[in-house]
Length: 229
Image (cartoon, rainbow, N blue to C red; front, side):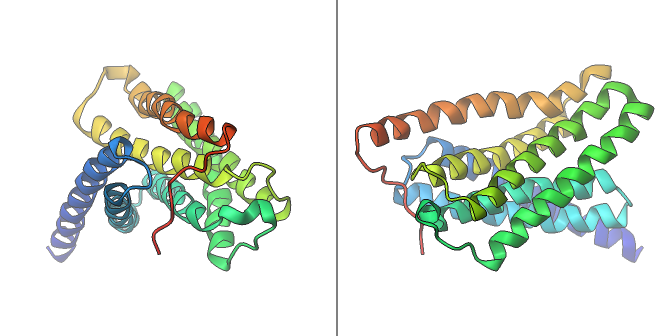
């Protein structure tokens, strides 16, 4: 009985956190970047993702679900690295990352590899479903490697932080949208597509959002997106 109550409590908090991340993530994509509303919704989005991460980790351990555990770390890695990008603007001037940055990137490497290894089992037992953890794992590992490389080799582009922030927070938002879709919809044996398609479509959206800021940089006009201390 106690286990049931605990699981239900975790599930309720997980759902509330997920809806908070879903709504504020969408608003952050629409708000003017760098404005007060964007910073507010961004903080609320990160808080929601923190709640999702904590509850998904606990639920995965209670239900012995390694895939949920790894996906939870994957989505939270994206949120954390995207948030920290705002405080690593001067990497191109050889700014030194803090210990938390090494921890975040190291976690991305570990769980990226973990998801890719896990995909082997799914390819064997579930066929095309193996594409899901393979895609997530590959994306996670690639981004973590990019982060670590920048810690050693200073990026030449001074707007690296903007691209990283937008793509990582957008990727974390895509994970939230994906979770909502797969829980509420199914297309039979092709449901695995619903795990991949949202990320692709939101990735295109992110590219369109970031493009104007790249144009400003090209014209030597600094973008207004700033970190909130």
